[in-house]
Amino acid sequence: MARLPRDVEALIARQSGEIIRRSFEKQVTARFNAIKRRMIREFLDHPITKEILAGPSSPNISGTLGGYGNLFSYIGFYDGDEPIQPILDLFEKTALQFVGTVPDGANWTIFMPAREDVWEVSPMPWASGRSWARGIETGISGIGQYLYDQRTSLKNSRSGTAIQTQQGKIRGKTRFKNVKYISAILAKYEKEFSNLDETAISA
Amino acid sequence: MKPQYQHNVTTSFALWLDHYLLQKGEAYTNQTGRFYYYQDARLPSTYKAFGTQYRQWVYDSTITGATIPSGVFINSTFTPRSSALKIDFLNGRVLATGAGVATGAAVTGSFSVKDFNVYLSNENEEDLIIEKNLSSQKKFPWSGATYLPPYDQTLPAIYIMSDSFENTPFSFGGEDETRSMMRSIVFADDPYSLDGVLSIFADSKNRVFKQKDFGSYPINEFGDIKTPPFSFDDYYTNPDPSVELFIDDVTVSKFKDSRGSARSYIGFLDFEVINYRYPRA
Image 1 (cartoon, rainbow over the protein chains, first blue to last red):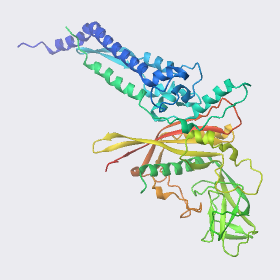
Image 2 (image 1 turned 45 degrees about the horizontal axis):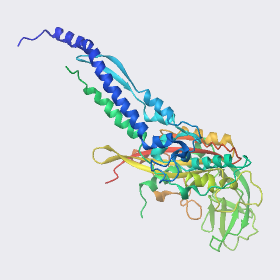
Image 3 (image 1 turned 90 degrees about the vertical axis):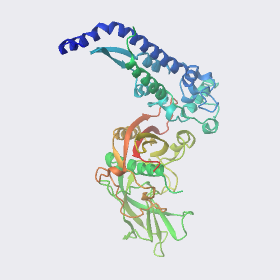
Image 4 (image 1 turned 135 degrees about the horizontal axis):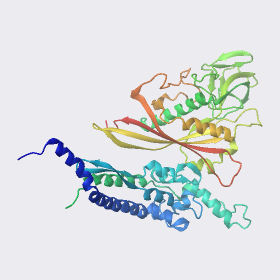
């Protein structure tokens, strides 16, 4: 079979990426958005997220406290705090950016949060250098629960200036059980996003 | 049970932390003073305890400028460390035996007091901060009797807790990366000291220290050095890649207590120490 000259082959290869980019981009973006939606849904459906979103009156649906209390007060958040929102904002910022064409295709870069980004936006209410989201995976002490109980007692006290009930030993009541959380979600979807490499134009 | 990897890491970490703070922060004060006799029922009856107002004392000879006592003056005569004289660095005292040492003997000496005592602890953070009420046992400022009663833990102090560790596969042939979480709580007397400690250890990220055997802890049951003098085996002075432990991450934070009470100034040091090893070999 006759072959095209090499410089013509090279030119076609170079230009084909540009020609097919629009169609290719449409497909990649659709697949990217579907994965991103799944990632955010998985984050929002995670028992840890749901329990914290439910606030101080939630049951311990994550099982991290052996069924006693709930994560919102155990971590020591203030009523009205929205600790999930900054993490959700990070997930929402996951983006796809066209970089350039290559022979027979195009390059995109995917920006998604790293674990460290999440740790940074999830400070403990009583120790801002520590991350509660990381603590879910490595362990959280009961200090937050103690402080939460103290605040609640203070609010409920008649004088409003003194703590009128002594809380019992924290350790006797709750024992935190670490679970995989953000790291697992990010690792799973990093893999899924990298599978976009295999995207090919369908006829 | 014979000592395991985690025992070795905890011992090595405690020795490194103590040395690093003393050397880098010059976190000690040289003192000279009188020792006072007191009874200690826990000691063998042949020993007499002469205590000071200060503990813990520095026992690491590599700390520049620190005075590491090798003996004390008893009735103006220098008496070196021996089987008849133990120097209890942890409780800030000497233990003397023999007929020649009366309870009323004039005992004096020089030593360096750590700005922060260092303790290994198995307790939880909430136990240490809330339930143990450690702030009532401060060593500075100190008034009252002429010596600190032995054995009680005193502040300022750093409590070291071995939290958890995890192996993840690293290379073919069974090599794992072992990541140990070492947590420490700092109890300081003032914000200056707390900031100093947090700053020193925040800068310790990516440093290396040596893994030592559990049995190489230098202090014996009397609180004295097992084989004096003790010199901390610093990785940067005497490198040995086969025993290195790497500080992969350090997070420092201050404890924020909304009650604003006048307790100690408290901070947290969270270290991630990694090592590459063959745990199944």
